Amino acid sequence: MAVLGLAAKGLDPRVWQMAFARAVNTMGLSLVMSFLGIYVVVTRGYPAWSYGLIALCANLGQSLSSAWAGNLSDRIGRRPLITTALFVRAGFIALLGTQVLLDAPLWTLGANMVVTSTLRGCFEPVAYALVADVVPDDQRVAAFGIQRMGTNVGWAVGPALGGLLAQVVPYGAVFFLATIGMIIAGFVTMRVADPVHVAKTPGAARGERGDLIGALREGFADRVMAMLLLGTFLCALLETQMFSTFSIYMTQQLHLTEADVGLLYALNGLAVLVLQVPALGLIRRLGIGVMLPWSSFLDALGFALIGLASGLGGGAVSILVLTCAEVLFDPAQQAAIAEVADPARRGRAFGVVGFASMFGIALAPLLGGRLLDAIGDHHVAMWLVIALIGAGQTACFIAFVRRRTRVRPLAAAA
Image (cartoon, rainbow, N blue to C red; front, top):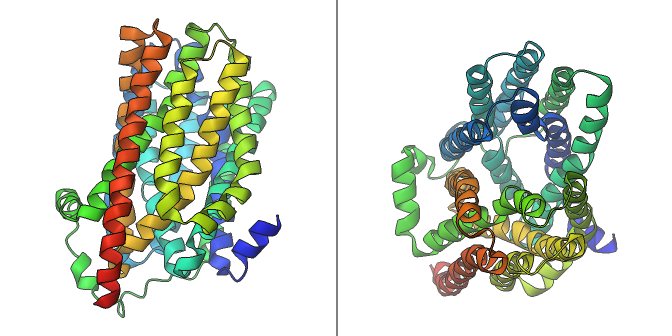
């Protein structure tokens, strides 16, 4: 904890406010969202592919709204989007709970899930941009690490509490508790002073072009940002396998029980909370230029190790390696986005990177499912193919670091 105290010393109070809002918001949502697939497929009896299609549409919706909201926040400010998204999404979560209680048709559930996911895209990149706005360069790793810890506290508490509540109250009623969590988070963010002063922001007019194609074209035209976007896409495509393909593989191919898989995910959540603080100290000592490629390589290694696992123990080793990669990569990546972004259009940068990430998340279950169907019986080969995504991610961040080190001296001279 001494490392955290040193890293967090002098942080703007808004960093802690946003971390608390993330923790409460995540805890509320994970109360219900962790079990929504089970409700649709097991309780209601719909085919699994139908839920997968809804999830794909929902993730694509969040991907598009991330780019739109990030860009818009440069012009109207961060807080209006963050707070409005939380309150409006709370209403739709309450509606979703009502739909579950009434056993509403699947298409209505799916439409609501797409809306709520799209609203999340109005929160995530804008909230990260706000944190980047209020801290200097040397505090960004600590600030983003604290945001990550807030999210993981929510995920550590929410699913366990949701599982207990579902035993004593109808599943649909749990959504109303999730709504309360989102409303609390909304009121917390109302007290956050907006760092964007629209009338005084230099270069604000440059952010007026808000179309997604234009933003992506601009991002890929920048050689540094292009590698960051491609590396982020590959990272999302890879890491999502841990929450989609991994669970199916462990139960279908290695014949673990659902309880065993739950233990592996619990190990991931616990390890994040234990390792995140020392990881922040390591990032501060070695720098994001070292940690981005090496954590990407560690990610690839962790997925390759899954192919060698023969049971619960092997799965646990793989999860621990992947968790080490996660706690090193995430704060370093967020700090990298803030570093290369134009300060007048930081929301646009976080939005476009959020688009790349969510696009990877949307495609990941489809890719993993196809690999399972095609070569799932060849354990080592299948996970090596998936690990190759991590090799591509590593190459992208090596290129990003090299181009970043060339550009920074030029920017300083200018």
